[in-house]
Length: 86
Image 1 (cartoon, rainbow, N blue to C red):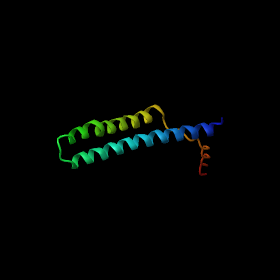
Image 2: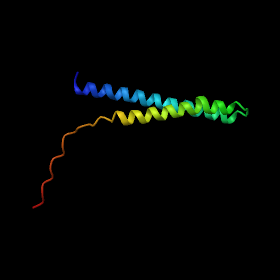
Image 3: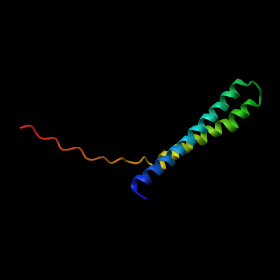
Image 4: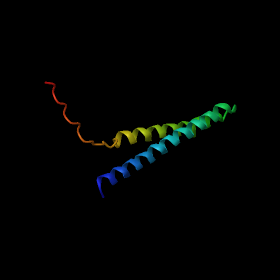
């Protein structure tokens, strides 16, 4: 397996994990929005149990992915040295 294939596999896995984290955060925020509109005593439980937990787990997954798997560094050709003016 070449380094380009490994880099592509790492990038797609990274995108999939970050996408999952984003969906968890979005789902948690939607649940919290619904619980804010709903005026019932159990709305707080809906806000706290699945809503806040999904947001917290999504943020933790996002931060974990960024901290443990740094972005791959693209190595370009070095720029040619500038010629000194005479």
